[in-house]
Length: 337
Ligand code: SAM
Ligand code: SF4
Image (cartoon, rainbow, N blue to C red; front, side, top):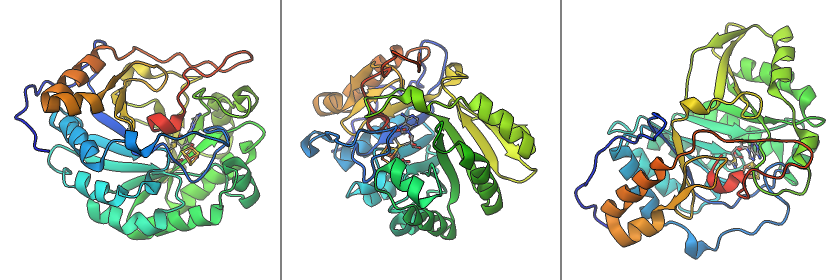
């Protein structure tokens, strides 16, 4: 498909004065793990016929780049289970330096060892790897069948290939509270960053998230007694705040959408593997970019993107508590965490 000359190069601005510079793409809703806070054991995934092709993902991504997006993160589901993901990474990588400043990925790490070198060759410099526990039994429990040795092997392979690593860890009451400080010490010693995440009410799972909710305000106070944490001005336009750890280059990030909402600085939108553009993780407002592209080409795409941005909500309204259901029916794996 060739692109028609662009009809609009308008920067991506929403009605709350925020400029969109960051696109997250869920390249598949499928996953080889079943983390308990993310998915239920029996998930129904999208039929392959409904998915965007690699070419369509690239066209949409490149349209966002032409309109001012400088950062793209590939996520999922598990991005590395998509068969043509290496090709996609390579294709998107060609945009680095021509508008795109950074291409990154969030992965569960199970297949990172096989992909790390190709990712570096394509221009990826950093990855986020999710690992909620380094204990084999606990890891198997939370993922329902995962092997943590495989993930740790993937992390070291990625580091050896030249990728900077950030570990994502969802803080879960009664599960990994006692592992947070050791995880931070490990990250500091290995030269990795660590982001702690509050469990968010997205999609139905097989348990009540209230039982596992751990406010990061409490976690942070406890970490402050064991580590020297200095506020770091680093900003991604996301819901995270950052601290430097013990005077090293290791950065601790807190993603705390429940206890501290930073929606006013939000600079991102999210594309699903089905071609829907979601303006907010916690709202159902979306536009269908797959239909727009197939029916209207680039002009249709621009029109749909503008309509979406016009409707970008001011903030999410996550609540976790007895009697509160999920904020939206979509799982994080659909919108791309
Ligand atoms: N499969 C990849 C992975 O696990 O890194 C990428 C997709 S996953 C949905 C992205 C991130 O979202 C992971 O760090 C995961 O722990 C987090 N996540 C998933 N469901 C969540 C939820 N309900 N609340 C908070 N974080 C969640
Ligand atoms: Fe899969 Fe990532 Fe969800 Fe875990 S958090 S089930 S690895 S998509």
